[in-house]
Length: 149
Image 1: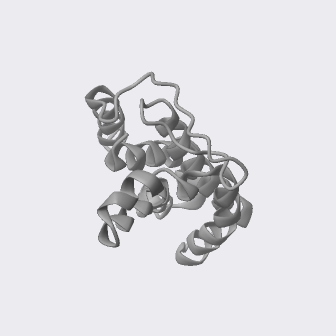
Image 2: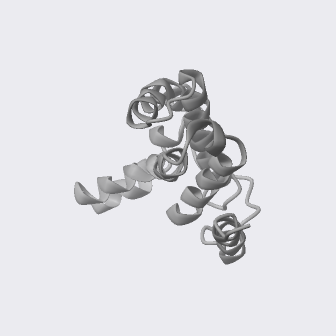
Image 3: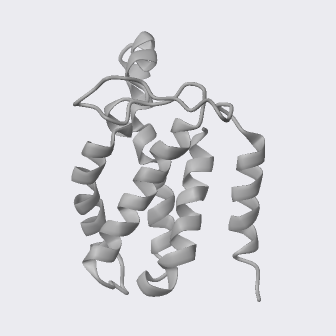
């Protein structure tokens, strides 16, 4: 799935459960955190061939995400003026990160969610890599949620 769709899903998670409790910073935080696992695309700068090997690897694995979530939650907690509870920031980070991997699992390319314990690539092959329907639905929900009531 494309990075913009991942970000929009993160924003939807934030808007549904966290925006009122954590304040207006929660949505931009979720936009960034949900896209963060795709940082491995920068291996292209080192070697274009490495993208095929490394993309959707360790940055898309559940175990490193569990380690990164408290750090990301602390970042959200400290940049927010309406801080809320620290565990809510961690939960928002976990949900955004896990949603990224789960959405990538439905594509034909799949991902390696169990690294470093197993390098098996898991794919449910339900959706294409670029799904315009998913992008339009999440984009429309993001825009409609910001319209005045």
